[in-house]
Length: 352
Ligand SMILES: [Ca+2]
Ligand SMILES: [Ca+2]
Ligand SMILES: [Ca+2]
Ligand SMILES: [Ca+2]
Image 1: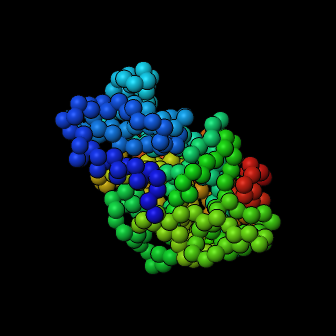
Image 2 (image 1 turned 60 degrees about the horizontal axis):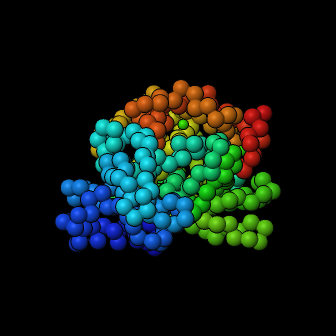
Image 3 (image 1 turned 135 degrees about the vertical axis):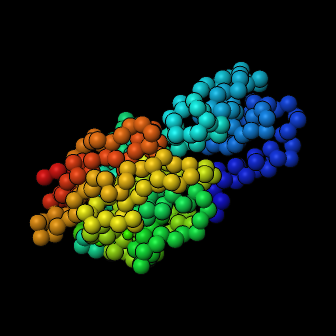
């Protein structure tokens, strides 16, 4: 299914290839009427047949074309000025590298993986937290437990490796999903969420229909070359695993890391990621050097692992693959995640 954004992307690219060159549309100050939804983005043409990015503003009007991340000028029709986007770094061309990846300037950096339950199988879930003071649009936000999640931007077919790929997943939020300031969101990966927590999750992964108190639980979306997984109750490995929350706009050649957690001391190259040597990325922290969250020990009364606050202790803030240049794989997860005696899906962690 093509999203509205993708349709626009292709429509404008097609137009650009056939008719924009030589028509004095350098800068492409868009004067078309209100035909978009606030927050939509599309490619526009800049001088020298390069592409820029155009954002739909409040009221449904396309704003100015941003070329090299810089407003190309004042809109001739409206007199409005599109302003300058913030370059969050990470692109290749100095202050701005040409087409601005919207993931680099979104509020995605304010999202955290806040709690994970790996066992028993019926109780598996992951929780996402927006600790910021503004709502965050989750339309381009993906989550995966696969160390090769980044291959989605290359168009590679889903191939997470390992013996049982049905226990791995790469999913995105349904377009238009937002997470309010301070809010939590729960994705069930188990077989009996209500039976475990007496509440319903916000979303579910896995290929089976999921009901909670008689109502269908919305599924996360499996993008092209992604997967919902097929092994509910065995999606989140008890012993060693990773979760990467990441942003991809569906067209950029690289993805942007948002938050990451790995657990288990007996790691392997499927349970921790290092994009060292992968084109377009900075090296991550070598997997042998990555700090890791504790595993749940049921015999100790553990129900989940979770964050007690939003401080990403030890995380390198520059030169990484994150949305604001952070190296998400450098966080001291042994410090920031602790075993929780009471899971709190959808609510602030008790940190008991
Ligand atoms: Ca498990
Ligand atoms: Ca898994
Ligand atoms: Ca982090
Ligand atoms: Ca919680």
